[in-house]
Length: 139
Image 1 (cartoon, rainbow, N blue to C red):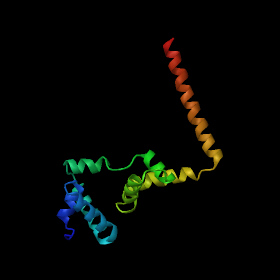
Image 2: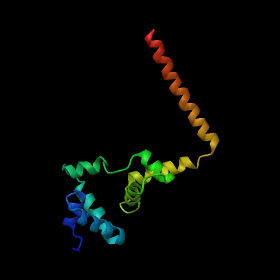
Image 3: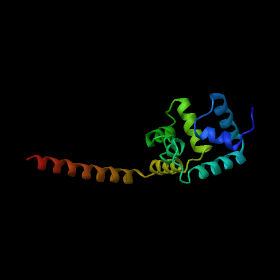
Image 4: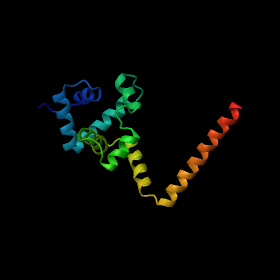
């Protein structure tokens, strides 16, 4: 297969490659730290004020899994293709937003039960207060 160039990485980021080329780039990214560094540089260069569909896609993090999906990833209850994608997104791409979100979810898993119960109680009380206000306005 062809050597991974900056142009090929741009095509990868723009989702403009064939399935075989995408697979080749992703496999190469898994195997090469130098290539992952180059990918980060290319992404940084592209994010400097670019307004293409690809740049907007990256800024809006449209390829990032949802918080619910990250929670399911932690519990290992996803179907294998999605599990593989999220694993690649976290470990190879090292998306800082998703890594931070994952760390937050992991910290919540380790929270002692009394703290979890207190947070739920406060949430319920604040929600019940809003429900009460809504009823008062209808009168």
